[in-house]
Length: 342
Image 1 (cartoon, one colour):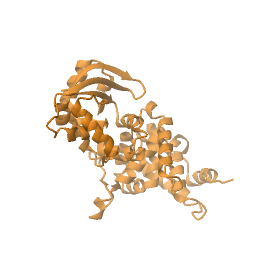
Image 2: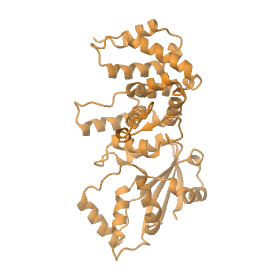
Image 3: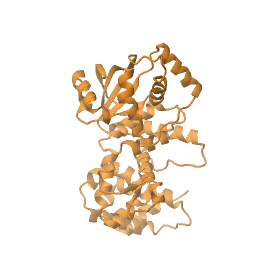
Image 4: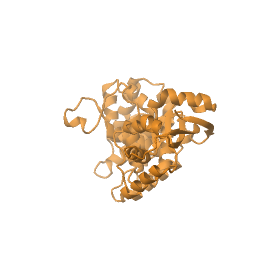
């Protein structure tokens, strides 16, 4: 088991953070399997370094703590160490390894050596967050600078690993899935991940082929750190629930399935959430029809269509209090002003 000896509150990510320890036997039995919850794992890098770590483990070193995480809204405010310890013990299979995948891999490798001591101690930090978005914020701050797991990879991995789209009334498929068949009306997992990136960074423009990947990743991390993520009461899961609700109308579903629309909507809905959660799927369809009619007035040969579709849909849904009763002519005037170039 994991013995917890202290619990404090992280006011930034609004989470309970416990400090404790376990032994190698428990870590291999209960923590090591958790790294397989993600579809894509970091491949072991710096082989020489991890070979040295393996040797050090066999000689009795104490590794840096593993960071284990859970999502539980009520327990995120719990500071009683006995309650936290009981929760961890009863829900260990629901945890996620936020930091320490390579160390657990190395520990597993070392365990096959005859000199391995299964009673060796391992420090563990445990984060219990109220929602996934805050876990990702912490994941990025923990792993920023490590290679080759870029911030983009972390977002994609967390999207695949912990965002529960199975319980939503929408079909989400990976690129690999579409090689066999193309389910009608399905959302692409890559588009969901791109929308999540936009939600986290509070920006609809996170791709730029003119900038090298390492610099782009640095910019992306900066956007996440500068966003209002830790002060939000709206989660990306809330946004996906809106998507599922509106997608019960086929026309609305097809509008949201367009990647650029979904990205703009995901950012705009953060601000317009209180209005959006009250409207019907038919009302939403009417809003998108007005949007598309106004957008069709733009000269597509003179603009970057994808960029402006993302930006204008974000602006539209961010300001529904102003545009909910606007007709297409009024909205066209707004788009005219937003797309003017000096």
